[in-house]
Length: 117
Image 1: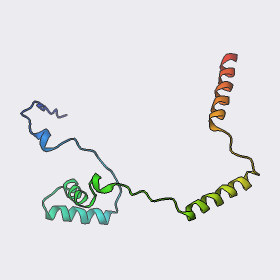
Image 2: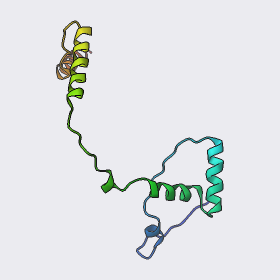
Image 3: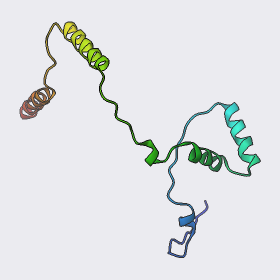
Image 4: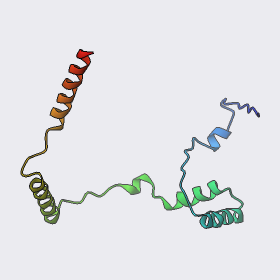
């Protein structure tokens, strides 16, 4: 077993050079992994450094990712109404039960069962 000692005082610039990092894991084919490894080796980088550089250049900054809100179109409203009518027909015109009421009833039932213990 190897023990590592690390000094975390203000003079330790290794923490500023390598800020807190997160791990992302995903599966790739063996062929793609081999190609990534070869490309990383050609640039004298680890796979993590190589992929990090690619992602840094491809993934937009947060400021660029502002979501544009599109107005609801008549087509969307018509589709929503059609789906709503289909659901009501399947349920024989019975609306869905209120979820808050269902939760309240289940809590009461549980309380009764616990009182019987």
